[in-house]
Amino acid sequence: MSEKQSRRVNGGGKIYPYRGVWPTIHETAFIAPGARIIGDVHIGAGSSIWFNCVLRGDVNKIRIGCNSNIQDGSVVHVEGGGAETVIGDDVLVGHLALVHGTTIEDGGFVGMKAVTMDGCHIGAQGMLGAGALLSPGKKIGPGELWLGQPARHIRDMSEEMKAGLRDGTDHYKQLAQEYLEDY
Image 1 (cartoon, helix red, strand yellow):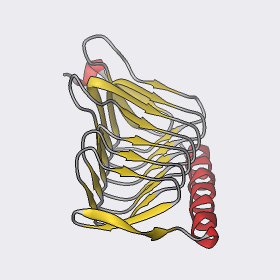
Image 2 (cartoon, helix red, strand yellow; image 1 turned 120 degrees about the horizontal axis):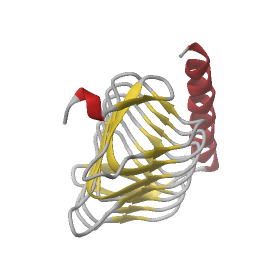
Image 3 (cartoon, rainbow, N blue to C red; image 1 turned 90 degrees about the vertical axis):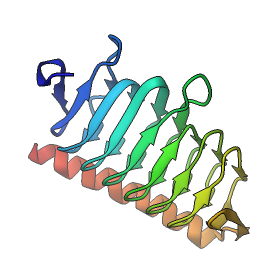
């Protein structure tokens, strides 16, 4: 894939086609410099993809809703012939996370350096903590907190924790808009 086949978008990141399919990115989404988005990827309004992320929609689809953020250095990929990756609205994916063939419902959270594997599902406002490994096919219920390697259910999240997730989403949405103004 040559540089001639890429385009800079909404902040400086690059998008590339795969087999003729280009990513679709809402005009209000922020794609930081150094980010690479390839193939069948859709990014919704107000979402942000931060520095040095890779979103590779080559062998299946990646769908990211509105006001979600994929933080620095994270990788989002898919399972060929199996699980696409679906990230809902208001989702936080922490720095250096790996999300692979997973569904994350609205308000979900994947902590820094956490890993989700093929066929995983994180329910609405569910949280996979920093450094955790969610084994293939595991399901985090709505509002549950999972930690460890392999991850297991620790407890249900408090209302205070859920509010913190909403605050984090709001912070990244504001930060992305500030970056867009500078680019």
